Length: 469
Image (cartoon, rainbow, N blue to C red; front, side, top):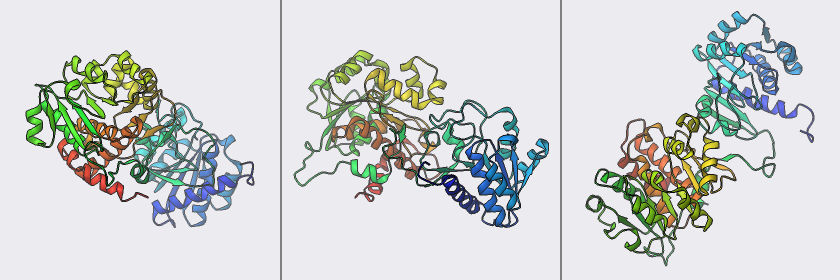
């Protein structure tokens, strides 16, 4: 802003916003547009974009929520272009309901808490109305930095964000309010400005992390992953974890547990042992916990091994905090993969607190246990051991992945990537990405079973490899 003429960034943002609104409308001329304008720069962006739409023949009206503090330049531009201002609060609600397009410029990225009382009826009218709701930079009422929603908020169909993605656009519950996110570059230099709170890997990033066997590779050089999972009550967890592990890049899978018969019946290539983790043979990483029931002895034996470990499900309940933290101090990578309920139990808080503040929860777990943590859920987030650095937000997936056994497949996949040589945070991030893609491919809008997801991991891998280089 110091290098550019005053207002240059706002004009760039307004141009991008107006273009996005025109795309949404399809036909601008004759359309009815209502701007919800607050006192900050988002309100200014909305006013300047409204002026551009008015010059193209749209009927644009601005509802000023803080009339004395509206952006003066934007307001003047709107009036010059033929737009008007609505002062009647009751009439504004009706206009919003009947609009073809509603532009949310109420609150900017500095807003905290939910919407103010005078804005709530307008947000509700936008939700009820017939028009498309476009948010400026982020939906008003959501927390830009954390993804939390602490009160009433605008539910947008499209969010046009400028300069950089905000964590709240990627992380639930706020992500649900954002709709489709459209990014507009306005010339900001974000690299090196500050450590990002969050980052989302893309195909090319994941492709660079995927293990690739060389000409001299054999099954042992590619890595062997051990799976200690399943019980008499839950043999299927073992089968699903092994299924994920076999498709995760390691050269071989060793299975230890009471479900050896079921595992071999489905995956005869598995190396099955009945002698416990310590005597199963050499592995480069372990997966422990899926369907393990109350087998604390096996969990403890795996945690005593001097190789990376992925801890899931019952393993999280049975593992001692000191044992996990001690691994972190010895420099042995550990990856914990709780869902929100398990994370809440580990932190001693209510599940709702974890679900409403995923960034804080995953950082706290990673710091408390000194382990990398993959927090599963509608938004899966991965933090490095200690809780520092950018939290990785997984951009793939589908609500259909919320099905029994899906997490067991993810655990096996992540453990295999650990065995293939990835760091704990990379293994968790890549596993979540591939698992989410496989879920999309398997579902295609319909219910899926966990085994369906496992069967599409190879297809997901191929789709990512296409972006390598």
